[in-house]
Image 1 (cartoon, rainbow, N blue to C red):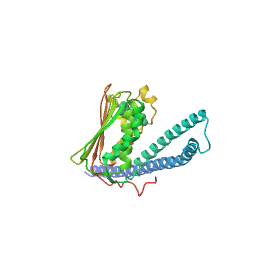
Image 2 (image 1 turned 180 degrees about the horizontal axis):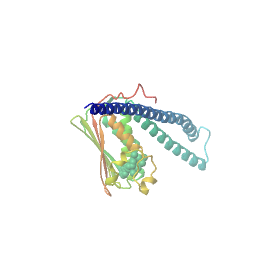
Image 3 (image 1 turned 120 degrees about the vertical axis):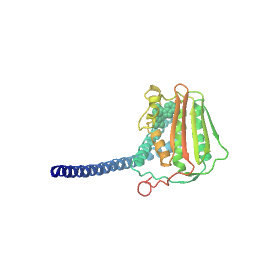
Image 4 (image 1 turned 90 degrees about the vertical axis):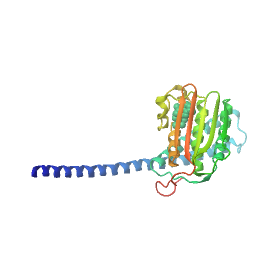
Length: 273
Ligand code: ADP
């Protein structure tokens, strides 16, 4: 018995030691992770300031503040602006993702009208759709209750999903439908694009994942949009689902509590940006 007790005692001590070592390692890792997120957040912030200056100066030129530019210069300036905006989008995405990962993204929740959010998304994407000859329509239920959540972030979510639908669809239509069932908003975005293969359906929500075909790569993008969208919806206590048929199109469904579950107070204090 004594030797058995001794063994048990020793094992218990070993186990306790291992537990302490693990806890220590866990603490180190979470500190390192926090540093990483903080680094990305600082970097993004530092990159944004000069880039905003570049875009600002380019706009002064484009507005003709210093006289009319020769046609070739206008063309070059447009490229400067397009690339600058693209880079800004990238930086903002990395900033958002690192904030979310560090638990520092604070939702600014308030009352919002889902109809207004969707109408704004349609207004800012319809020229893109028109340029591709796509029909973009929204069918919004008349009796939607007012929601409670972060209107700017939700607009970002729907802009991403509708933007993707337009970006990846070559002909046909993009239809947004919004309704409310049992305290939940259900918004679907349906397209007649190429569809997403079963093996890619979960992965498109992962960071940097883009379906590996030439068209996707040609369209540019970062592969961060849906990862951010899903996390923003999750912060509201909701979820994004995807159903799709190759060659027929995709339907992204956002299921969102009318009243955001928690007034997300993750992280410390206010958002820096
Ligand atoms: P990005 O659009 O910047 O590449 P996202 O995270 O928004 O990144 O999307 C990830 C990938 O999911 C896209 O690159 C594309 O391959 C695929 N995808 C997203 N939306 C659609 C869609 N409506 N139809 C087909 N493929 C899509």
